[in-house]
Length: 166
Image (tube, rainbow, N blue to C red; front, side, top):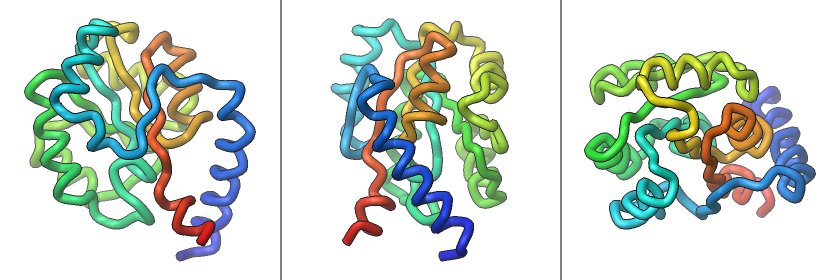
């Protein structure tokens, strides 16, 4: 792991710990796959959802690896019920190619929690922000960013940080 990745993971861990008692997500999950078909239908009914914004690093994949095939299948299932967009503060050609093959919009370099990436995602999906669920692993970038747009939010436990603590 590169030095900047180690520093970023540490800062992210500290920030999440500080903010988890201040910024409250609407939902909490251990893993994205906990949002299965039944849970997704519950969320759609509860929040009148039409779209979902997915974070990538720490949410759909760990340590800049490829996105796990189970998460790819999960995203394809999401597309059956909602409009889907991947929004990341990073940029990765592998993710971009995967998104193109899946016909899912990928917004890199979003600078979350700034509004720009969230606005671009809602515009692309053609969905009002109040009908969007943001799923991510960072309280500041994903949860705070989504909340300030009037979106529903779901935090995912970041497995990267869990492995580093061992």
